[in-house]
Length: 215
Length: 276
Image (cartoon, rainbow over all chains, first blue to last red; front, side, top):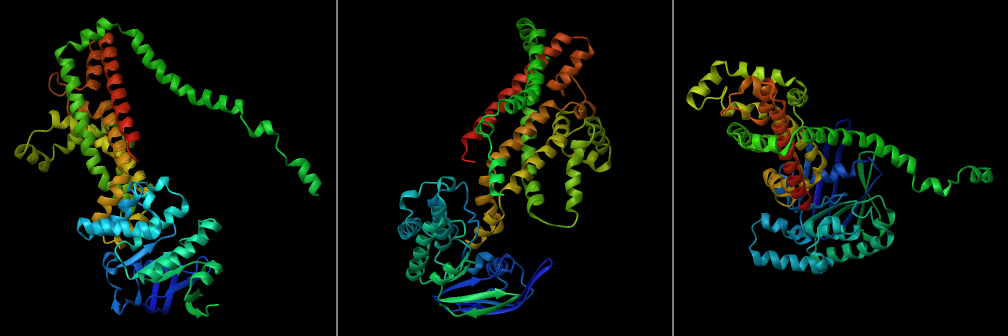
C-alpha cells in the first residue's frame, strides 16, 4: 500500500502542506484535481524527483522518503511517456531487468510475458517514432511494469488518446492491475476515467486531499 | 451578422495553395548567399590551373601542411567533443551558483578577436606553472602542441554550444524514468541520454573540425609559421601571400575547400544514417 503522512513540498512559490492519504494494497486509486493543483508534484515527490520538506512516504510499510528513485521500486508512467527514442520496444521492456542484471533467459521470458499482456508482440523491433499514441502508451506501461514493481504511478497517461483507444486502455489498465496485483495511483482530471477505473477516488483541492465516494 | 462574416472570411482557393511570389522571394533572398559561396569557389577554380594545383601538391612543405592540418584538426575535434559533452550536459541540466558566469565565459573565445586568443595563450605559457609543464612534460609554444591548443581554444567553444542545445532538446524526464527503472545518474546518462545525443556529438565534432581547419590568428601568434614544423594550410595561404605567390595561395585554398567539403559531406552522411 501507499501511505503518505503530513507531507509538505515546496516548489518556488507553489507549496503543498500537510497532505495525508493512503491507498490500500492491490487497489486502483485515482487522484483528481484541477490543473495546477499539484497532482504531478505529488507523484514526483512519491517517485523521488522532488525534495520533501516534511512528512513521510511509506510503501508497504517501508519508509522511502529518503531513498533514491532507483531504490523505491515504483513503476512510473509520465504524461509525456518519455520513451527512449533510440531503443526498440523490446529494449524498453528489457531495460530495467538488464540494469538489475537478471539472467538472459529470465529477461527474455519477462519481455515475452509483457508483450503478450500488452499486445506488443508484433511491435518488438519498432522504435518510438514508428508507434501510434495507443502503442506508445502500452510500451510506457510495459516499461514501468517490467521489473514487477508493487506500486504503479500513472500521470494522466490517457490524455492524448482518442476516445476509442482510451476505452481500450481502460480495459487494459484494469486487467493489468487485476493480473499483476499492483497498487495503482492514477492522476487524471477526467471524470469518466475516474468512474471507470477507480476503487478509490482522491481529490486534491486547495492543498488538501479528501476522499470521494466511488459512484 | 453571420451572412456578413461568411462574405468576408472565405479565402480564395488559389491563395491557400501554391504561392509562387513567396517561394520565389525565399529562393532569391536565401539563394543569394549560396550564390556568393559558389561564386567565391568558382573564382578560385578559374584563377588556378591543374598544373599549378599539381605543382603545389608536389611540394614537400605543402604536403606537410596538409598532413599536419588533417591530424591537428582531427585531434582538436576529438578533444573538443571530449570536453564539450560533459560541459554542455552540466550547463543544460544543473542549476548552480556561477552558472551564468560559466555560460558567458564559454562564449568569450567566440567573441574575442582570434589574435587576442593567440596572444593570451602566448602570455599564459610565459607563466611559471605553464613553463613548469613545458619543462616536465613537453614543449608547447611554437611547437605542434601549440597548433592544437590554439585550435582547441576556439573550436571547443563551438562544440560546447552545440552540445548544450543537443542536451536541451532531450527531455530530462527520460533520465527520471531511467532512475525509477533502477539506474544511477551515470547509467541514465550513458544508456539513455548519450545514445540520443549521437547526432549532436557528430555535429559538434564536425563544427570543431571545420573551425580548427580555418583557424589562423591564434596559430600565427602562439605556434608561429615555421615551415615543416608548425605550418598548417591556413598559415600556408598566409605564407604564400606574403611572398607574393598568389597562384600558390589560391591553389592551397582550393585544397582546403575540397578537404572541408569531403569531411562535411562524410560526417553528415554518417549522421543521417544513424537512427537519430
